[in-house]
Amino acid sequence: MQFKRCAVVLCIVTVAMAIAPQCHAIPAFSRQYGTSCTTCHVNFPKLNDFGKAFKDAGFKFPKDDESFMKIPPVMLGAPAQKEMFPKVIWPGTIPGGPAIGLRMNTFFQVTSKNANNYNKQLAPGTPGTLVPRTDFQPGLFSIFTAGNFGDGIAFWVDDDFSVGGANSNGGLGDGYLKFVNVGRIMKLPTDALSLRIGQFELDLPFSPARTWNLSGWDIFDQANIGTQNPLFPAQQNVNNGFAFSSPAQGVEFSGGHTYAGYHYSLALVNQNTSGSAAAPNNVSPQVNYVSDSNFKDMYGRFSYRFNLEKDAASRHEVQAAGPNGPRDHTSINLGSYFFYGRSVQRLSGVLASDGTTPTVITAREPFYRAGGDVSFNYRALNLIGTYMYGHDKNLLPFVAPGASGATGFISGSPAHYSGGFLEADYMVEPWVMAIMRWDVVNSAADRVNGIGADAGAPLGSFLSPYHTTRHRFTPGVQFLIHANIKASFEYQIRPEQIVYVPGTNTRLTNPFRTNTAVAGLEWVY
Image 1 (spheres, helix red, strand yellow):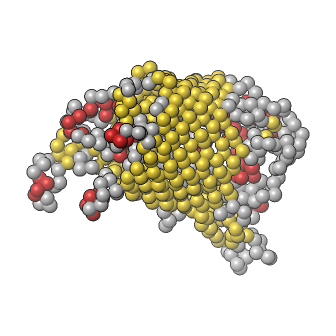
Image 2: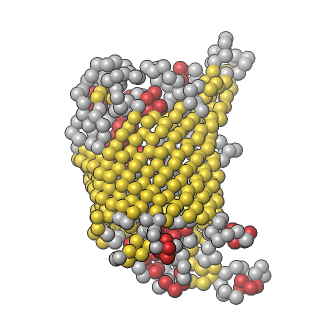
Image 3: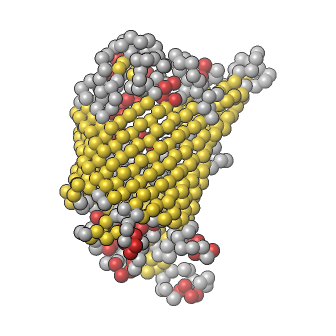
């Protein structure tokens, strides 16, 4: 348990290095269309309205795409073959130039000198985890490609070759085909139905994989892990590793537009909840948490964006007209999202009813995540935020009278968490963006595990005002040195912490903070 506490603190303190956002800026598009990255991006990888329309259309200009393309695609067959189908292969296209992009970033951080006070709760002789005051950290080297094969078939692949400079944790991010506007086959309204298949990030209101911040939004990284701690009266038997920041594998149906009007998506994906932990109260040697291949998790989202431009002509264009050229619409976007799945627990080392035969009992534990979001844009100001609630049923091993071990599962108090973030982005200049952000997570699992701002304090202690909640205030600023080179800075401010003798109200330290300043430099090609 002490190791888990230290691991969580280390993750919090070094979050900017551990979470390197994947980029949605594809310089290959700039080469293909002979235009700047800022055509689609406010401050890469943050999309403007035109970038959203470009993505919705399957990585094509929403209107007159062929007239804007400087490097024409390569035809895979003559257009006349469409008239001869199905006697011939349906013709398609591939990008005319190499649709390949590269990305590299690096970080430098400075952490409060008292960050290691957290280790004072550990037993004498326990080394704990040392957090360096200053640290240079290579981020990731990534390759990505995207484009379309004609007839509304888009593709995307990104892969991290090296993470942290040592090829650790590298792997596939997103890799999918998207069939845009397939609803036309069924005579549905334009863009009413599209289909995406492969590995992809869920259609969240704000993309953790392509965040423009140095550090990720805490609520999207939150998992629900809370095995029982004998120091506390609450019981939890949840080790659900699912988090929205992880990619999913499956199929997604979607429609509408993200830049105006309605937008929806519905996805059926594999489970991503595996893990393992010791069983509560030592009722058996091990509880295994695995994915259930016989059940697919479900995710749904609906949003509606109101474009609020006074001028009707600007209101219905992809981007509004401003005194200095196109800009994003004045708009408000309201949305909601819901995820339903179940984690599977297989309790091994149990005896059957005869008291001698080893057996395994299985529980399929339902869980859901529900949230709402808002985005308001006015000229150079963008205000965004989300609130999310997570709920796991929490099935506890049950020992029947006279039995030597667990014989089944019963429902305990639900394991839950809630939280979200508010963020304000302001474009001081077209190449300078100022950021102010507040993240908050309130987790029952953190409370059960003794993880929080007051390490080791007993549950409900009046000396532990932050024990159940994690706050983080993060001001920042970002500069585009060139359209494809960005320098970023953020300062992560966390609440005061106090370390106690575990399970008592005796303080080991005075209040202290573990604030972190992080600078980053990244480029794309």
